Length: 381
Figure 1 (cartoon, one colour):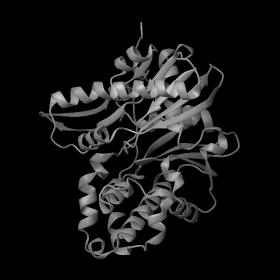
Figure 2 (spheres, rainbow, N blue to C red):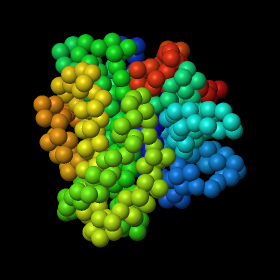
Figure 3 (cartoon, rainbow, N blue to C red):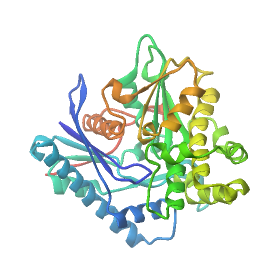
Figure 4 (cartoon, rainbow, N blue to C red):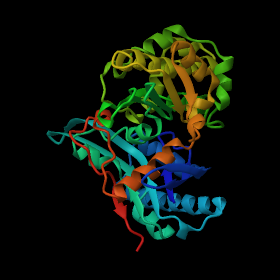
């Protein structure tokens, strides 16, 4: 048995998946989610936005998040009625606070880098369970962008001899894995399409002065009207024209992007629900644009399997269905792993591969020059 721990770009909490794994199969046994304390979430979001910090603060929050992840793992064991000694392995994604997937100039040289915090040594020490963390750097050292990493698991879960599939995760950022019919791992490709819930959530927090952190069930978007000029401008974002492999995060769609949205003439005159509806349609149409621009010209897709928090937004899902005729939308829950548990489930499997010294990146997804064993192993004893 293994635990997968995930905290995404929205930083809304810690997801913990209990996974039964063998070399032949993996199955989700249970799942739980634990919210971050408000001050910790505020710190994560501030660091993720690139605001001023100190090495001391970064070091402290790295270890403090390790304690939080360990606490969530132990709380999950209690909830699942399973002893920590029955868990062989933990895979912890960590909390991304910076990701520069493509090389950029720094100190006179071009460099790419990534930073996930939530010290895995602390998790191993507090739980007594061997922990694998820091998955992304090995792929980047092999020339990749360090993301997305879930495509390896998408391939294991969804490859099919009769139908081409896309696995679409709509978290803070939206990403898609494409698995052609009868695909081998070398045929799989993936990339971040752009904003998922990140811009929507930021607008909700802004307009409600922090009283709400997301648009539950798309209720605000459902009451709004589309702002066409604002949408047109947002759809001209240069990121959408960049060919894969590519990754996105708060660096592209964080606070600075929010300011640009709110500064638009049409947004300044509109009701909050109108701006939120427009951001919701932006997420859907940027995904659709990615399909038409980079996916469908390469391979036929008969089914798209959706996961992540965006699956709970009926406005978003309805726009996807209307804009992708001929492609059946299914939830990951229909195929065995509930939408909210998918990424935590994935990092349990990635940790299993690491422990067995097997590569688990997908070069067609990240742009790496070769397959790589991901992560760093922290032994409890």
